[in-house]
Length: 254
Image (cartoon, rainbow, N blue to C red):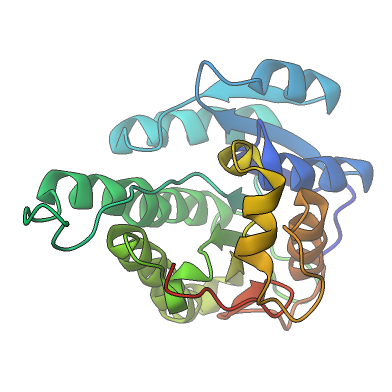
C-alpha cells in the first residue's frame, strides 16, 4: 500500500516504538492519530506530526469503540493500525515464599495485552472493511506487538509470555479471517528495546540482558521497529506472520 494519503491510528503512539512508527508514516505523507493514556505526551506528539490526540485506556473495551470511531471520523478513513500498548508483571508461578502467582494479576496482563489487542483489531478491521480497495484489492493493514518472550519467556514472565504468545498465535488466523476483505494482519516480536519501559535499566544490566544476541549486542532502537512496521505496510506479501526484530537474541532463563 502507498503511505502518501493513507490514514493511520497509532495506539501507544505517545512514545517509543509506536511514536517512531507514526513519525516515519507521517514523513512519507501519511496522516496520523495518536491514541494513548491521558497523562501521556500524546498531545505534543500529535501536534508535532500534524495529527490529533485521543486519550484512551485500552482496557476500557467498550470505550475503545468510541475512541477509534472518533479518530477514524476525523481522519476520514483508516488504512493502518499499529498497536504497541501493553505491559507485564514479574511473578513466578509459585514464588519463593510458597505463594501462588496472583490470578488477578495474570488476568490483568492477559486483558492488557491479548484481549485489548483483539478488541482493537476487531474495531479497526470493521472500519477498514468499509474502504474502497486499492488496485491490489487491499483495504488496510494492522500490526500488533508481541515480544520474543512469547517464545522463550524468562523466569517470572509467565503471564506476559502467555499474553504475547496469544498475540502471536492469533495472527495467522486473523489474517485468514480478514483475507477476503483485503485486510492484512501482522505481528512484530521485538527483543529488549530502548523505550520508556526499559529506561530504568542501567547500562551494565542492558549489556547483560543482550549479551546472547548475535549482532548487534544492544537494545533495539524505536526507529528499528518502525522501519519494520513501515515495510510491512508497503509490502502486500507480508501477512499472517510474527516477525522477530531481535538481533538474533534468545532470552536466557533469567
